[in-house]
Amino acid sequence: MEPAGTLPQAARRLQNDFDTLYDDELLLEVERLNIDSASFVQMEGQGDVAAQVLETVRTRGKQHNSVTGSGGMLLGRVARVGPALAELGSPLAALAENDRVATLVSLTLTPLRIDRIVSVDPKRHQIVCAGQAVLFASGMAAKMPADLPEPVALAAFDVAGAAPQVARMTNPGARVLILGCGGKSGLLTSAAARRAGASRIVGVERNEEAAAGARRLGAVDEIVLGDANDAVGIAARATKAAGGEFDLAVSCVNVPDAEMAAILATRDGGVIYYFSMSTSFTKAALGAEGVSRDVTMIVGNGYAPGHAEATLALLRAEPTLRDIFVERYS
Image 1 (cartoon, helix red, strand yellow):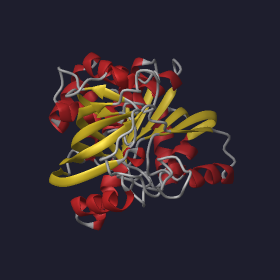
Image 2 (image 1 turned 45 degrees about the horizontal axis):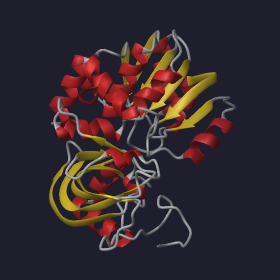
Image 3 (image 1 turned 180 degrees about the vertical axis):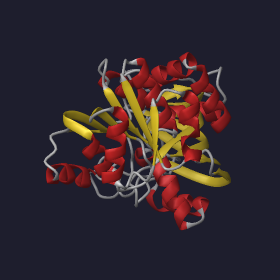
Image 4 (image 1 turned 30 degrees about the horizontal axis):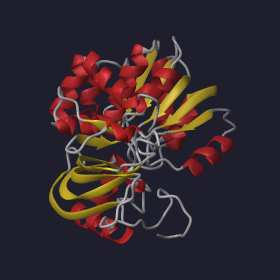
């Protein structure tokens, strides 16, 4: 709706009056929002998360945090499958009414209406609510698996692109740095890097409590405790722990200003994967230029072919990882 001609993610406001539906749309009855970590932490710092989400959706027609620029995804039940989805070749056409699904596209581009919020879960960054949402033919959704509690699957789907992409970026014998190794994307990517043949994996977490899950999983060889904003200190300690600079750095932190720690720790010719919505890509690009570091920096695209299935397969293949997710998010 604003500005005219923009695509949904970049729009300031979307139409969320679902009295009129188009033939290429999937209508969902919304039951739970999974707010992305950077957005939830930012809203927590401002006060009442529920009130902020209600106001954002009321004014924008979607959950699009104006500070972090990020959203999350949702769990819901299919209410209507648009008749044109099949002829358009959309994978959404395979769904049926009453299927329980998690969306695999961002809430920042999903038309959404919230009628009421039932509860807010700060541990899981999830909001139980009632409302409706629409997916377009280009959107994606995954049926909820029968072998995992729904909040657990929702948490895994929220970061489903991370592990498959890190797996294909990790060369056998590589040194890998995981900033934010104790969060859900950090746990998944460290497990993926280990299975892909990394020779040395170093994790970074802010304190021992945050690092507990990573220690239990055992996919990282050493954990450096400290503030990722301390770029010089973290880079020095991490490279010492690894025995040299890193071939691949993965940033999974949910706070701003961690760009330079990854840059300083990565070798010339190495790769940095910023899977964090708190990343400033201006700071990353200009910061790398400022220290004359020739690194390839990759935006954390949440999509990879088969990413939902690959992430569930990783959870099933790693019993300790699965146990941590079930205990933390169920």
